[in-house]
Amino acid sequence: MRHADVLRFARDAAAGYPLRTSLSVLAMAIGVAAVVVLTSLGDGARRYVIEQFSALGSNLVIVLPGRSATGGFSPANALTTTPRDLTVDDAFALTRLPSVRRVAPLAAGNSEINANGRLREVVVAGTASPYFDIRSFAMAQGHFLPEGDWNRGAPVMVIGAKIKEEIFGANPAVGELVRLGDRRLRVVGVLKATGQGVGGMNTDEVVFVPVSLAQSLFNTSSLFRILIEARSRGEIEAVKREVTAMLKARHGEEDITVITQDAVLATFDKLLRALTAAVAGIAAISLAVAGILVMNVMLVAVTQRTAEIGLLKALGARATTIRNAFMAEAAMLSLVGAVTGYGLGLFGAFVLRQMYPAFPAYPPDWAVIAALGTALCTGMLFGIMPARRAARLDPVQALMKH
Amino acid sequence: MAVIQLAGIERVFHLGDSVVHALTGLDVAIEAGEYVAIMGPSGSGKSTLLNLLGLLDRPDAGSYRLEGRDVTTLSPDEQAAVRSRRIGFVFQSFHLVPRLTAAENVALPMMLAGIPAAERAQRVQQALKDFGLDQRADHRPDQLSGGQRQRVAIARATIMQPAVLLADEPTGNLDRATGDDVIHLLEELNQRGMTLIIVTHDPKIGTRARRQLLMEDGELKSDSARPVAAAS
Ligand SMILES: Nc1ncnc2c1ncn2[C@@H]1O[C@H](COP(=O)(O)OP(=O)(O)OP(=O)(O)O)[C@@H](O)[C@H]1O
Ligand SMILES: [Mg+2]
Image 1: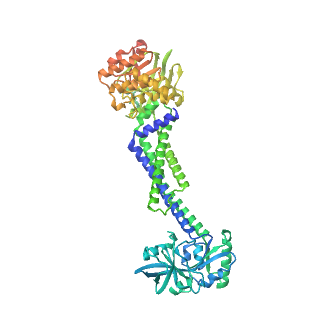
Image 2: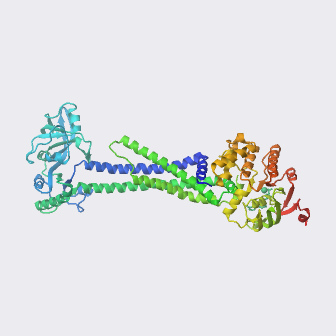
Image 3: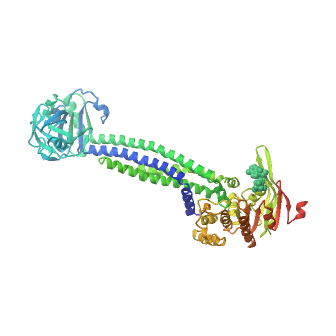
């Protein structure tokens, strides 16, 4: 029997039992679609996080108080006690290091903003003028915090785009006096909307004030972070070394953690890749289930078409021909199911992207290849047994079944 | 030379503890172009014999020569090739593939034999015309009458121009008039040189054949071509 005829025969056989065929195609499709959608989610999350981190600025090195055993980023960092605070003087001292281009102190806290008859809770970031360049900000109106002594900040503030909109609407904000906690500050600038931020700190919703002002507002002398920009990507490691050495000298012991954006990114990247693979693995179980369903469908087909198999043998079909025909049918069910599932999965990812435009939900190539491959392999593998059973049928017995 | 030569054929079925001798000590020779009716009571081994002749079953002992060639020792694939090219089957219950049209059913043996589609289409068209089915080419079996179905089955059985046509009670599911039509059709094929072997319960059909084999308990009770030999 010619290959084209085997395929046509298998296709007609599958089409001859629409309910059974559509059920197994559906099962396979759901399995593949699950892999595609879930890996889209996982990989989308990975890309999303990486994009957000990249928005932090380039060649970034972050100093945080407290010693972390690994030196990398871990949630435990947030819990370590701080033997000695990071201070504005610490931050200022770092500006003298050779590999450092810019340094910005960062003190943070929550406060209330009260202006134009409106009241709103805001995140207050106390920092200094270099922060603008480190974060690659852009201004919508006015200018950023002025340069000057970090320990004597002017009573001014720069507000995020969303704050501006909520408090001032379409009216100009620059030059206005605003109450922040128990202070009165003048708005000197409005940032361009970025829509980005990490850890719930969307810069559009932040109020920037001089670091000394923030410290007195929150009644503290410590810093939340020190942000450093290295002179180049190649000098990030040097910055790390120099910063660690200098702060160790100043504090008498190594009680800080220096993290680089690369390290954070690598950690998140690894974490989310593993997550995606795990999710893909779980989804792949549904492919195995679909494979078993294809096997059952083919076993039913063999039983239902026993008389037909007997007839084919009487008409001169060889055992291999019959086996190939049934294998081809199983492969077709799997293939159509896999392709349908792929389409469904892509559509699902598309819907996700429509619903959450910021979330890049695209399935990774490896997941697509793995899903289609697994679907075809399980379909074929589970098709072997029924096909062999069909090929082995005794023609006389088979013909009597009618 | 005989187209079919059976010598000392035995066929034994084991059903649990009991042993059924479906065929015992069978010696038959059938010449090319003969018209043979196999008759006998139910369970006498007629179908078993026909299945052996059609290479759907193997004897437990004895030899079977088809066109001078010992076919019992052939491999399954070789036997399939013989079935494909030299043997045609007609069944009581037609055995048409329900999802295929009349034309596709007739084309089936050629498709299995690997004959190209263009040649198949041409031969199917001719066969359907010969059997008066050209208006029914695209009908599925459930859209055909019993007589038409059996004609499609006969067209299918003969499309590969076999040497031997085996029919197991071909009129069993048909009314008298339609059954007669089918028998006439088979007889026409026989007149054109095809060896025709029909298993039947119907004495009227049996007597139309030029030669009758009467089976009983797996043995050949009488052979109209060899009245003396069979009696001894
Ligand atoms: N697969 C089998 N297993 C066991 N016994 C069988 C099998 N096939 C046939 N037999 C037995 O062999 C004997 C001959 O059966 P066969 O079908 O050849 O009879 P038959 O002459 O065709 O009868 P009928 O006229 O009813 O069709 C019967 O006794 C039957 O029970
Ligand atoms: Mg019978």
